[in-house]
Length: 262
Image (tube, rainbow, N blue to C red):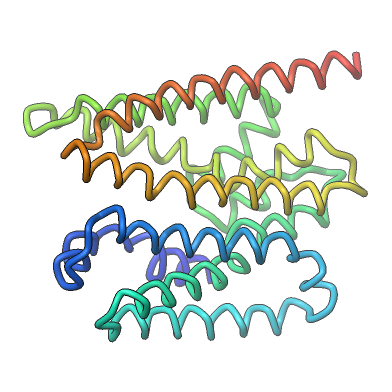
């Protein structure tokens, strides 16, 4: 399910940036508003995910997932106006909200006491499996530090990457694979580390919703800076500083949590 929904409906969307902006005569910042609608709809659904799963069950939600994603892809393929494109983005966000982080996080939530991070990793990619394994062996603090450091390396590689630095492209590929779990696997693991089992489902809903809201804000801001400056480099420099702040903050919070139980 994740192979289909993420691989064919979501992860390759960036490949069509130039084609869609040229076909619809859009600025990149206007194009990225589609991502804003997508992530806002995802965040809204995530807030009510626990209630939805209790009231309707997994089977009906999975059917709704594929209905939304089929409708989204159909709109993307046929829309000749900007509103049609944005409607496709909203449907994509609703479908993915039930497919990826929250669905797998709900599975992990059933085993919150054991905190088997590798359960989630087994249904995602090899690097996400590795993240779960490292969390079991190293603990949450070292694992999230590794992922945060990888994210900073990704941003630095993008800042300095050009046609003369193919090595940075290779470094980016490996570092990105290690950083990506921050928006998927690490969310339920962090929720499990900070909250007791009774509070875990609600905490996970909030974690995912806040993260998704960040996606909704970040995408149009990045592309607006590109429209104004003709380059993503200024936005990437700001992103490095923000990611460094996030890294320090998370380590401080985890340290406070660990000290409380010493």
